[in-house]
Image 1: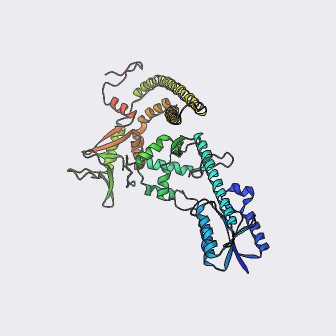
Image 2: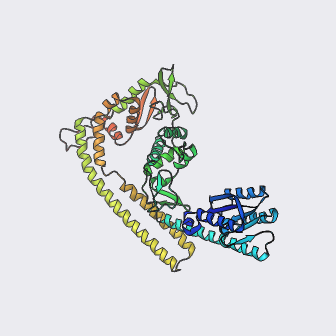
Image 3: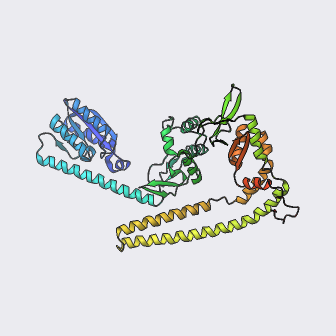
Length: 495
């Protein structure tokens, strides 16, 4: 009985459509074996590239027939189903010469063994070389097509986590099941309160899973947080491109997360204390963190990261809440002042909108000018009117200018059009913020404190806030006794 193995392969769905499907190859291979009187005792049906050096299934087949001397015949469909590279060609030649194996190309009805004449081996070498050339051409055309797609702002690869490939448009779109986890990951990291390990655990608890339902590891999350594709950009061919896909997060949130990841801000490792990562020590500028004492009381103190200093400050959480509350109380406005500020802000808002429109129009005109210059540059290149090195230099320069102008346009367009309304709400908030603070739980108190100030300094059991805008203006104004408008709303503040 003549024993044989059958090896069939495809490397793409396109080959399935062109008649090289696994089922079609298997049918032809088994019909060939039946005609020749061979018994197929094992077969491999695989989807893998024949160009890679590391072909797992192919190597398994090679090792299998080497171990079984009784198996002499190996059946392939056509030559390029066997190999498209020189490495595997050597393995096939070794099987023939050193292990007395016989290679069958079923569709062409060709047989190669150690007795094959030089002309047949020469033809086989040519067929492998042609298959290799075809593979190289396909690879080159694919790369060119993907690069062209990338230049047009269309992401040219498989969709990352949070996106999915649209089979109709061949573009990427937001994955409704995963996108909110991506946004959650960036938000948590940007808050500065979560290390990567804490983030992985929390996302897993909230339901974030890999393809097989497994926990998504720390390295995968770390790589995800570095990808600008989530804020509308992507890297391809060594360049940063602005994509046409819908961003999951804003550029601002992405940049905040990068600051934390790059060590510009440090995540708190003790996020179970509500006021961690909120206060710095007034003596050494280190973080102030919470600590449980006697398993009953929460105290806050300096981390002493720069060395323990004299007169260390320990403050009970209840006392800290009271001191922090004074920062909230310091920005409370009276009804009289709020009404006066509303009128001033309304007039100022009109000027700001007009100035923003002027800037936007100027930037758009600059963009069109650079775009026209780039178009003329391409025309000059195609007409051989400009040297290659000069073309590349100017192309990089113009593309860089376009990206910079586009970034400025996007920044202006994403400015909150309801800024006046938001400022009015801020003023109203200042009126009722302290009563809300008093009633809130510690975690809510911490969020309110972060809303009004970027940092708080603890010194001698007193708190000094670094107010955010516009609360810094409010606090400064209220600290001046003559900063009070009269009953006439047209009066300006004195001093």
